[in-house]
Image 1 (tube, helix red, strand yellow):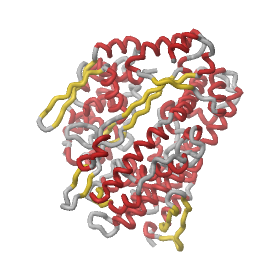
Image 2 (cartoon, rainbow over the protein chains, first blue to last red):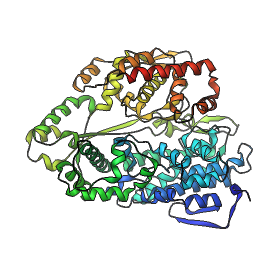
Image 3 (cartoon, rainbow over the protein chains, first blue to last red):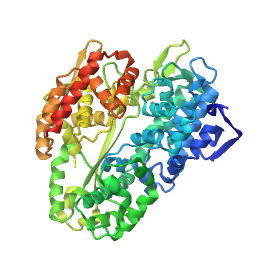
Image 4 (spheres, rainbow over the protein chains, first blue to last red):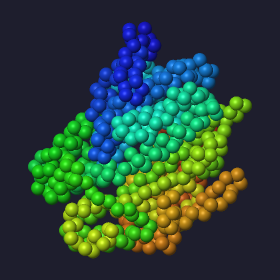
Amino acid sequence: MDYSAEKLNEEKVFKDPVHRYIHVQDQVIWDLVGTKEFQRLRRIKQLGTTFLTFHGAEHSRFNHSLGVYEIVRRIVDTVFVGRPEWNQEDRLLSLCAALLHDLGHGPYSHSFEKVFELDHEYFTKAIILGKTEVNRVLSRISPDFPKKVAEVIDKTYENKLVVSLISSQIDADRMDYLQRDAYYTGVSYGHFDMERILRVMRPREDQVVFKHSGMHAVEDYIMSRYQMYWQVYFHPVTRSAEVILTKILHRAKHLHEQGYAFKHMPLHFYSFFKEDVKLEDYLKLDEGIVLYYFQMWQEEDDEVLRDLCLRFINRNLFKYVEFDPAKEYKKLARLSQLFEEAGIDPEYYLVVDSSSDLPYDFYRPGEEEERLPIHLLMKSGELRELSRESDIVDSISGKRRTDHKLYYPADLIGKNEEIRKLLE
Amino acid sequence: MLKDHAKIIHAIALSGEVIGRKKLQKMIYIAKKMNFPFQERFQFHFYGPYSEELTLRVEELCNMGFLNEVKEKKGGYYQYRYTLTEDGKEFLGVNNVDMPQLGDCLKDINTQNARFLELVSTILYFDNLPTDEVKEKVQTVKKSQKFTDDEFANAYQYIEMLKNRTSQC
């Protein structure tokens, strides 16, 4: 029997707190879930350092990936099926891309990518196209199937309708993570009527559109996203933990380059320090390994590395103040000088961190914002861009909010009056 | 500490004036592919590689008063011109950037038109593919642009020229 059409003898289900059940009928999907590269996602938290702020946020990229798959499955199997604009041959491709879209994420991706100049999307492609269990499963469908899956995730696949299911301003990825992150953090934001949104989705040649009657559900989704970014994703305490984590990695890399003799050799990090990371090295690293090293480095002779690891492991985070780079960059330079005079290395202990989000944007001809707008399908059959119909969305369209904070270790500053004054 | 901001201001200072947001995106992307250490992450979008982080950074630098943005009506759409302000110069004085050869590279890219830069940056985006597949891929994702064989040849020649120039530094 054709592997792509092969069904399990009995449907399998994963119990899920967000979608209740995640249904698997396809042998291919079941086999992909069982691969070691997909199982690795269990050991990578979806929200990185957020658990240090919201203690419930321990959920993994494994949960989220299954959730995105389930949303796409509901769309293609119940909403799109039988519609002329939808090609049923794209079903399995959409499901595989949804399931695997985050496959290349590593532990604490944001910090790792910044310090070691990595890109999780590169590794997603490398896993799908390389000598891996995932590739073996996908290749059984057809030799070019892994390439197609990688292209959908990379947004370079020619059928933009399939791409938009997992990558657009309202896609399965966002719909899952908003609800899942809200559930696990315990916040009351992030909720919207997904069932309603799914019911009003309609496939078009190169995008998904929404029946006008579902506009309020879409509005609710946009507002949920806006609130989640500022209440959860950009929480300053979470950012403080991430600042410290990033600085640990910087310090370890710096020490390695200086020939420092680690008491506990960072074997798993060598290829990262050299910025020559092979896929097999990348796959070996998960949060368990990273935290093991941080635990061990609390006993290193290097004062900075030891201190930063103690802070991260024991949640003794940096304090923060609001910072305006335009008006205060000279103050920052002065602070940097004062830190040095006080024997506190500003490279590691005085950090500006910025958060920014654009909740929704529409396309303006000739400009390069490059965001696919959300289109409403009117009764007449005409498509209207969402912010032209919705006053709520119009009020936040194209409005970017940015926030800068200056992080520092309050306990190390002690009684240094000038530093304290400048930071107040 | 504000190094990434300073790098973008420096790039615009070296270029003199950059006309068009799309052009600015492509200039920084191509420079990044030539190993200049810009930190902004790029993903594939309609016009080729695009960085939302860069859009944000530029918007922020305009709000800070370090870059001057002039919006001009151009037929059915708007065009943006970017130059450095006096405050921007002062900021660069406090936050030095050292990227030798960047000026030569950016000045040259700045003289090219947006369509050509779209092709060059898209080819560079797919540089992990075998050469014979790159052209096919670019033609698939940029179907509407209908790039000719001559344009491809010129783009490859241009990439080689930039690589040679930057490898000498």
